[in-house]
Length: 381
Image 1: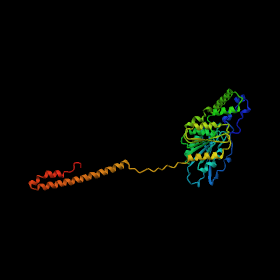
Image 2 (image 1 turned 60 degrees about the vertical axis):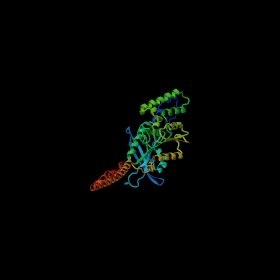
Image 3 (image 1 turned 120 degrees about the vertical axis):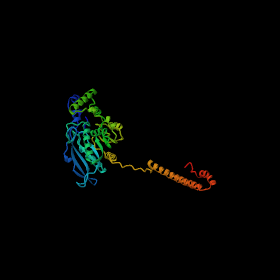
Image 4 (image 1 turned 180 degrees about the vertical axis):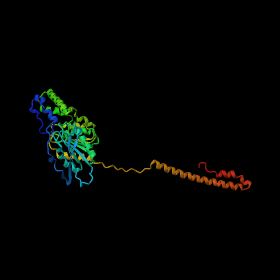
């Protein structure tokens, strides 16, 4: 039903009775063919790209269900084993349904030269990771949370962004709605909700089947998934979570996509809670993406993941209030000292006049009040 594999179930070759009663449909949802591959297919551990040497570090994480997740981190190689690990921006690549981390090899040539490291993992139930079923975003979002926690504690990454395709894009949306520390997302061919995708696929492939039969089939698949995989497909609704996201996002939609029709990306772009834009490109759900799109996506991530330089502004020097108060206090003190000095001079002159009058004849003493009046300091002082 929602599978990125070329081996997906062809329901057009079955009758509607077989479609409801058989187990092909629920397997197409939660147990599509697993993308089995060898470790050698990941390429050499050390490799050169654009004149620089890079190294792939393979590791194993444990998810919330106790299952092993096989992961790889592509980073610039250290010059020596004793040199300290540098911190770089990191893009976490999330593969589609019935696929694996091998998808991430296609984005290495566009991200690594821009100074962005690439972390990828086989989500639970996919590739070489453990897990019996896939859940198209429900459990995968929790797997992603485990990977992000590891990266943030590693000390080797700075800002983190997500690049997801199909199921991986839905997983990225679910996580971005909760994790506002993410800096940017590239979302290639996401779906709004599983119920809509299922109805559209059924409408394309069961054109002669009555609608009530289609609805019965979808409900049967839903119940089977709930019993076997422990989640409700109807609750996987990225469109309900998109408005809660805050980081910038670049949506991509293939014009000939019959599995996830372009309107899904268009609606999610409109619902996104942060800055977003949408790019259409020729191709179908699983075709190779055109070079211009992958380059634009890589540049978009690199732009938002690079640490921002602090903005320097010229601010005119201003006296603080305390310095202004100190300047005013000094001015008042000088004025007061000057007035005191003038008063002392006047008093001294008065005293000298008084002493002179005491030694003067009586007729001169009578003029003392007039002299005192003349020598009296200014009242304003």
